[in-house]
Length: 270
Image 1: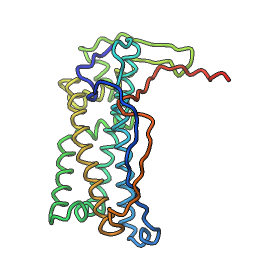
Image 2: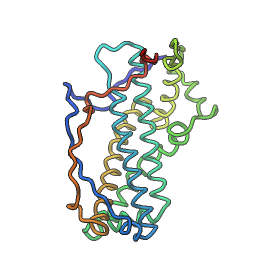
Image 3: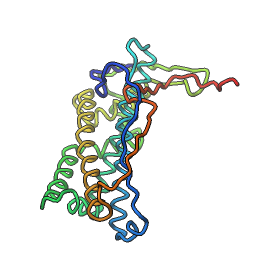
């Protein structure tokens, strides 16, 4: 059984780019200043930074995992779709996990309300915006429990397996090494299951809607986290202009990097 993609996972750009050099701004907060904060403020600051970094990395990996060379083989295209959708599931699952802790830990909402902006009431508006945005995608909770961070039970998966619109021919690819063995039909089954959770009437429409939701929610969440952290640090720990400028050489541009499922896993000969 094979599934044709109706759209690219993420937009791509033509041409290759060298990694070059990027500019970073490093701040080192003295121990005494940081530990003088309340334990609640330290918790909020560190948890929000951790969430930001995970989401930022997963978003980039989803883009990289979706890239393929023109004229790729059927096997390579199947593997490309598998890995791109796997990272996308993890990304959506982590977005939902952010909302769970944001919803259930009042300290986090109060932290955003207090430090997101200097404009009175802007933080409360941002909190309400986050809640409304996630509540408009109620399917995320079900998909998280049955696909993103867990596997479906037999009862949950049965409607997908009995879908009369799916032709279940079984495709298996064996490699001489376990690392190059793949079960494309199994991956299609797992992804089709959550596509139908996102949109029971149109599975591929569920994929399209989920990708749009991921991009919109990620932009909202990461912008909120970064601005809130920046404002808090500036007001309570260190002026943002007090930093060390770092010119960091980087090996690759995001537009050059690829992750391939099938690869040579033989050890290098000395």
